[in-house]
Amino acid sequence: MKSKKSQTQLKEDTTKKKFLVVSRWGESLDIAFAISMEGHTVKMYIEDKPSREIGYGFVQKVKDWQKHIEWADIFIFDYTGYGKACAELRAAGKLVIGGTEYTDKLELDRNFGQDELKRHKIKVLPFKEFFSFQEAIDYVKAHPNAYVIKPMGETSEYKQLLFVGSDDEGLDVIRVLKAYEKSWGDDFGNFQLQKKVKGVEVSASAFFNGKEFLEPINITFEHKKLFPKELGVSTGEMGSSMFWTKDSPIFEATLRKFEGTLAKQKFVGHIDINCIVNGNGIYPLEFTSRFGYPQIFIQRAGITEPIGQMFYKIASGHKFKIQVKKGFQVGAFLVVPPFPYEDKKTFELFSKDSVIVFKKDSKEGVHPMHLKNINEEWLITGNTGIALLVTGTALTMRDAQKMMQNRISNIIINNVYYRTDIGDRWLEDSDKLWSWGLL
Image (cartoon, rainbow, N blue to C red; front, top):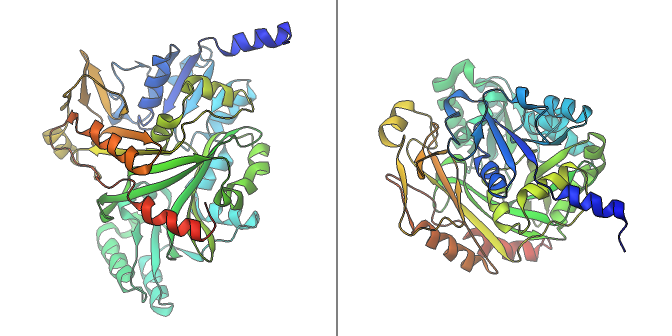
């Protein structure tokens, strides 16, 4: 029989809360909207000025999040760079989902991230940092190989600049470096050349409650190229497929080794590590020490408990098993011009205030991205051209894909484009992962 104290605590935990969502570019609208639909009170702040129209009509917007600190029960920070603010709020006794200065650095400083992997006795791929294009070109000529060009600092936000070479002599990398030198000059900043290895690209991630990782683990397969069959420029993301699991050899070989460090840093939130794996081993590439986009929305499609209550339990340091669906989840971004580029004139000409039309009155599995809600009409706003994320879930990958495609077919957006092959990689990748003992 439960004590009166534990019954009271349970009652307190299930009361409606006041959430303050602090967003860099409005990426977490779907999360804020979902929490508000569960009956919680939500206020949302967006730092980027051109993105501040995102969310109007969906949730209450505020112009200065710091004026609402005393009001909020729980804070959600949706991007890196807020680690210091999160630590200060936690020190003041506030509940926070968000990073720390340490986890910010894991993601934003590639060299630091790689050094931390090595410090935790995790093998990494050889890499070298460069501050000039000519220095990098000379290096490739002296050490012919296939390389990946990885911008660092502010330039790393331009995902289309990441280049994965395919020539074993590095000739394609040299050509791209020369092109970047002409178009960017000294404004490009420093960057890495990382040795390329062949294998399956996969990420392992989990939520962390300030003390330990919570089960289950999430395994994600990203689709970064603009067009189907991995053609076109690299984008931040065009869609992902995923599943939840209790056990993951990839997770145990990588993130699990950071559990003590993250606890010492009092990290509370979500962390992901992207890897290349093959028959020779697991090679971590980079951290995402925050929500992944669109990863968090596809995860939400597979989480069966209320997302607001789940975040509250995580921020409160509770140990619990997250309730999730069996099988697979997939999701695809529906985008419009100028995505993945930034061009204000093109956006205003082709996409701004375009109406999203639903053939049937059903929005299940449809996650609002850079939108505003005017008189119950969803309109595209912001400046990037990311309209929606549409998800599907099922016991098999094929059925999850069919559900997603059926939901997409119910939507009309002028000039829309999206990947039609999200999830196809699983059919081949799973065979390889099984044969390597990594599933």
